[in-house]
Length: 403
Image (cartoon, rainbow, N blue to C red; front, top):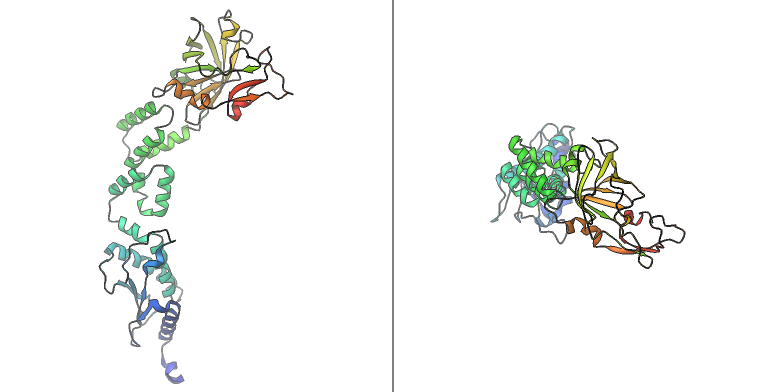
């Protein structure tokens, strides 16, 4: 026990060091080991235990040496001017960290120490907590990944990332892969996965490959992915696009109800190979008769959101079309699979993709047909015949079609 006079002779910095060391010993208990045994400089170690860094019981603990210790030594000018000396040591182990991983831990610790010492505050407890947080959040994994080149990391990501959300999550968890995550090998693979089940995959993929040959930018596939995602939100057609598409034309219902039930006509094409020509004509193969022609008019030929069809052959029987209604009023719509669709209350046309059969083109509608009952308060205008029920796809937009 030192006398009061002896305590007064101890420099303020030494007194603060002893106070912090004793505080650390009290807080960390079994993980604290004093190394200096009362000598100067003060030195001690903190055991960084492996089992602290498993986030829950189902996690696989990080592979740390069981005897990993953080060594702290105080210089005489700490905490007024200098930070402690830190090192990573082991007692006896067969598992050691790579030098890059050790440097990553120490860099984290030293950064925190410098921030505290700048304002003359003891820093060891904050440094220990920073080290534990670094280990808990996968810091060693990131440091280990630093041993790999961006090309290696990009190759790994191209197999791991199955969606843009995967890449974002990996980059958030492992910031070290951010540069690698922008490389073409990653996004080319992601484009293929993303587009594979979308309408027009073959055309979209071949166009992207051709453009890459002409403009091999280092971030080409990332930009292409983002551009296609943005374009998929577009709900209008240009004249050039419309005229390059071929449509399959179907009607929602057959012309006459049977025993009050209006049956669906979606299972059979009303017309195939429907093509809009730039001169305003419509060419197609009618399912029932030859030589039927029509004209079309758009609201805006470069930003087409709505168009009308006029039957130019007026002797078509009512059973093959609605003679009294010379115009079909079609709204341009974008399907969830990025395909194009034109529809009104009477008919629906869908753009045909090279890789898709006609049955596949309509499967979402034809595979879930239900019978809908007409509300008693609602009058029918579609047919002069009594109609109390109809077959309709189980879809809210379809069930809202005019009776």
